[in-house]
Image (cartoon, rainbow, N blue to C red; front, side):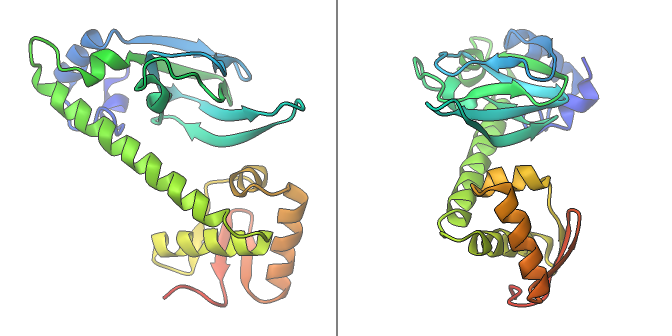
Length: 222
């Protein structure tokens, strides 16, 4: 187990190596490897564990009745998943958690995490605080996404998203973490429509871009 890596994650932040060792034992931690495309948690399952990605990536995939599916979110090493569902006993998953690449996941028992043990381990309060911070940030991220997808047109959705990224970077220059397909999935639009709109926005003098690097030219947030 890479304790240095774990100490750098948001879930285990603030814990030293000895505390991490104790936490892993207390939380009944187990590590498992998956190949790209493997389903880690299935839609309809009820889970009691959360996963922390220690290598590779995981996609949250939503499937529809007609057989189509979409990637709702792409998670990389250091992120946790399944916490919202595991925290609600008996809550069935409405999505699949799929290995986006060959990956390694550290599974932690949610009941052991959110309930302080009889020993009242000093690290336990820090873990609960960390989990609350991570869950709160996820809620904020979801709120941002709802704002970006509230507009009907692809251009308006892009302007909303780019405005947020510019504000975060404190500049009209910024780099986004998505591929074109991931950005299309995130904004809920077709990839072809996204590409066409980006080209038109550049021709209209609104943006400049190269791959994932962007510059806002007009209407930049102050």
